Image (cartoon, rainbow, N blue to C red; front, side):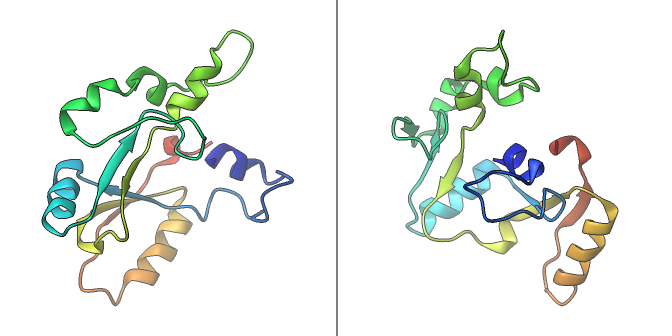
Length: 140
């Protein structure tokens, strides 16, 4: 989806402002699962795109090895010599039902220092402020 957003021209996407305003919230998986379990929130991870009609999900951490980590890390996910499943498996997701506590966000990845400054401004009054880092390699 981030690639589609970066192109600014998808006919089914009303948002056209590109990828720079997008922020990545980073959390520790074990802490997130512990919080969800203690607070009655269901959680799962998918093996592919959760927006598709055929995805598989799992709800045990010992099943993380079923994710195609090579596909998740792939920098080339489309083209004539790349399996179409790479694109689908790259989109594996971790999901928590209902809500996620701000205090579990341990970092924020941004596209540019300009966006980092804007995020700093937005969270300036918050009691908890996670570290903000420019992570250009997380973007297209």
